[in-house]
Image (cartoon, rainbow, N blue to C red; front, side, top):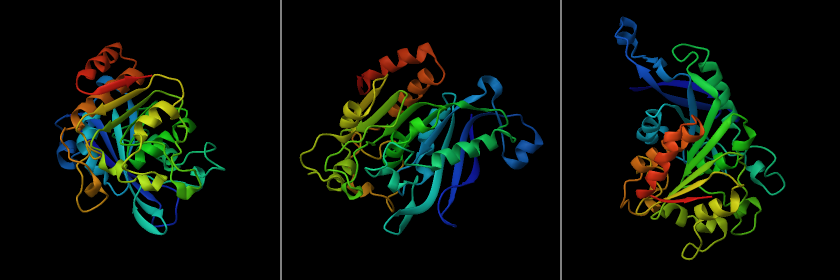
Length: 312
């Protein structure tokens, strides 16, 4: 059984645009007592505690509840999964839901010196507080952390992971490290990922959002190499990495897209359901690298029947 609870943490920025609201999914167990009935709060299942923690960052203007099914599926494999909503400045004074990007940290004179997403450290600090309080006291293994993300959330994870020593795995859907020319980079630049752990990258062949954003990177959308594949081949250091391509899946394949927000209107058709296969792949990847389960490594090999897997 997976339950969730809410938490808040102060992040960078000027009030009121300096607060992140967290949703924490965790394996739970029913006791049947009155407190549970009256509050709706269930204690964590002690069977496999403490649980490795997955911090997942959303795409721009994509609410965290869009990822509820994905987060629940990963949590069911024995993880605590944390999502976030944070309204703050996107760029040029525009406000919206964002994981938060330190734009100065992504410029040529600073990239590689610090995280582009400072909110990650603040979220990890909040989880340390939660781990000292009921109902999750002692249930979070904060020495075994994975960072994940979708779209821009995946990009900042790839740009930030190595600055947090407890991060042992990184995964992303529809994300790459190609960088906007407005930040001072040459067209088509793919930045080296700031990771020192295994990485899983996932993408669908019908990703219309990545294709529709080509001009941001000084490229022609009609004729360009896939930025996700370029990130996999050019941006990652040597390691135990995976690229998962799901034929017929689109950019919002792992989310329940909100048609009133974000840029799902650019997306290609969802000819294939990506959420289930990518959630299973992610869970097996995390069980391999965070829990050290040999059986999960065999599952990763078997999942190649559902997706096109490339290893390096």
